[in-house]
Image 1: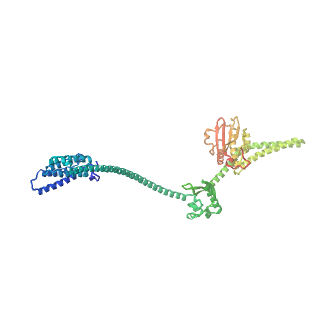
Image 2: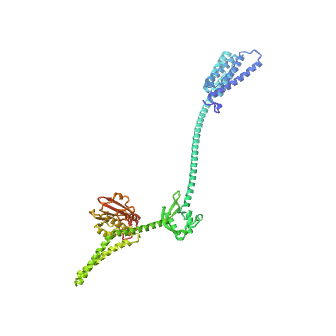
Image 3: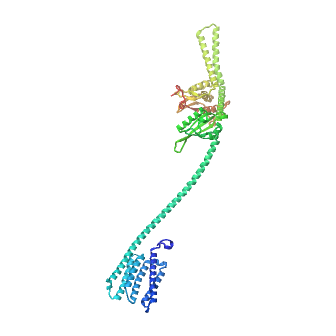
Length: 604
């Protein structure tokens, strides 16, 4: 059931049926009351049964009107309405028969009018209409029989017209029922559409609310991101401005977009005045051309480049900088400019130069100390050719005094004197070269040849202790790039350590082997001895400065050797076994890998 009109909605069909029945009863009560009053006023004869019927009709109509106001009658609307209408037909028919004239024509006319009224007013359908009309038609038959005694009046035109009125009321009721059914169906569809529309509106409202909430969240998030971006931009601007590096940004046409305070301080150009200007407007032609060349290189390659550059920066004089230039790409990936950061490394380079000089000084001291260690052996080696020269000279002098002029014997003596002199000279030249060679300029060097020179330096020490130093002849090796004197010093240090390691009395096999092999893009040199190996407590600190097992050692040889090797881009390490002695290895990058081997020095 639907809510009634008091709730603002269309009343139910039962409620409509009851309300319209009350409307009919009100009409009946009004008309009957009119006739009652008229008869009371105008009657000139005693009031009879017909008047009583009229009063009863008024009373019954008013009672029905009042009773039908109750809510409970809605549940009984259909049977109650049918019964009341049928009772009304019977009651009117009885009233007609009770009239003084017994006239049934008036009753028939009332029945036709009532049938048409119920058909158009009551929404109860054609079945209830037919049922009540049938009751009215049947109720007329006793009235006709009482008046005429026969049913011949049913064949007259008025009877046919009355019958047609009854049929017409049924047809009208049927059409009204169809119309109401269609209306109810349309209303049901309308309600369904309205409900669906309300659901869609609710869904759209909820979706819109969700979208609004999401949009509000996105706005809040965007606001937060914008605030963070502005804060980040402020921090970035402060960082760039307070950086000690020279920072600049240019567009693809070479016009400056931004420079920092350091740029302004060093070059004396106001930052706002620099914007939109080019290098040739700010710097000397040579420097401007160099900067523009670097910018083009970055834009063409789309990769960052770095290089060292000396710049004359006002009162600071010439300073050394590491410059990094990088492309700036937009959202589409196309470059829109070039960024540049130049860091002052003058102090670092000065420190590196100071360290290099200190290292060279330490290396020179180490060379002096090495010769000092080998002094006895060098003296012994020089003493032998000098003694031989003296003996050969004395022998030749005695023969000359004795008058023995044997040309072959004298020639042999002179040749031996010359050979021993050359031998002594070679020893002295090797030592002098080792001590006085001060140039550390990098060149392309042959490590195998350097090993031979190092062997000549330590040969006297090895012979003094009865140690065999052997250079293994292997495949032809490509050269490396570096300082020949520094690489030779590494070889001398390692070979001399090996000689001293096997010179003890308990060493049966006194041998040091030097081997060089190629390993990929590096050259690896191994110096192996047959001594007692490296003690476990020294293994972790073997290359630390001032760590030594010698009574008069400085403990700098291995530390300086490692520093030299690492400065050349290689590494130095040691392996040891108590049964097979120790092996010191160092590797150096090949000059062929760096592409700086002159023609004619390549090795396979």
